[in-house]
Length: 476
Image (tube, rainbow, N blue to C red; front, top):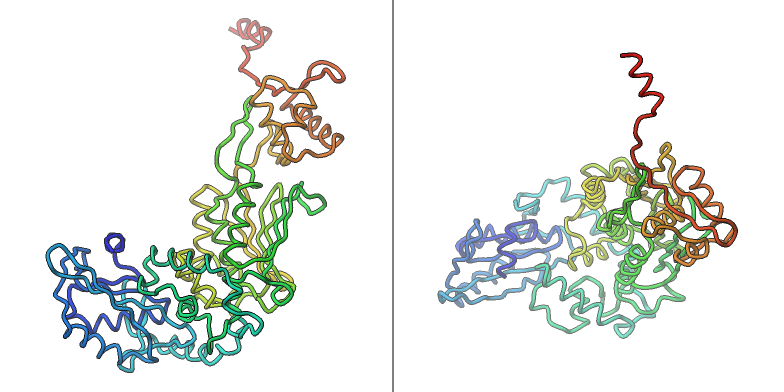
């Protein structure tokens, strides 16, 4: 509780000094219900000072009476925290059913923007009404008839609840009954599991859910002609996200730069991992799961990294608008809500803008967004590619590896270079890479045949040419 208070008021947290402010607090809860839920703490001043209050049966009766004025009916968790001064903190917390939005309090809809609550505009209210009428037809909301609660990863479910409680987005009183948890997360209808429940927590996906698929590839060069590493797998969204991040840590080159006479390595990935993770989360939340052969794809090239997901952008949203303030219209709001409750999505509706901000903060160019052949993609371009001493030509992945090896040792024979490269190319290709670096003036060799060794050229500043000095003196 103290951690939440230290964080301050936000879209999901509101402080009230006492239940004398119960009515405006219910308006705030209504606004939170029309987003992704939240909590109101009574006994905390707006400045975040914990003062507490007296909590009696009369207090709870007043709370229960006003809760009945929320429509559609919704569960509000109520908990108490005792303080050393004998007073208590009363916490009201809720997790909405997105299919039932918009919620109203005493007949009026409210919205929560940042730490402020206000009457919801008529246009927003009408849009939510239309979305509620279409909820039954969304793929994520349809039942998965061949799946039961026993087909789910219970450990992943409880991990989600634990992380959600830590993030202050799921009430501690949620319990450990799996069917009840899934029902509160909006993943159950009429005691049966929905497609969204399988996507998030399933353990078996073939033959009914082949679209729960991830493609990972690290290519040699700038096209798909040759692989350095590749993987394909089925799994629930959380496992696939974890596998993608492991693949990135294993395959993503570190950023480095060649300057005259020196190879310097920076111990940072070529692209900010937090931005890549945000892009992957967007892909899992917004992709079109009705495309049976679809997948999320991640590809690393020598000159870029791309993440693709099947499905088109929502109506009126263009790739250019993704870098600007835009309305949040997730194709799979239930799946997105669980990502949010788990704490993976930090600020709703700002995922693509956050990706841009993280890249700029890391000194990288803005990523590119696009839409092609029924898919949406994001492309990351590096700013710290290796730069040869002559010109600004980009070096290949293996050329960078060679320079890194030679920067650590005085000289290395051909066989030693090949042994030090994790996934070496054929000998002929490796020799071509070496001679290309020699042509650029970055490396050279000494010796002949099998006894030849390669070394990095480390140039130092040279004194002025003697002839020029003499000429200079003559000019004087």
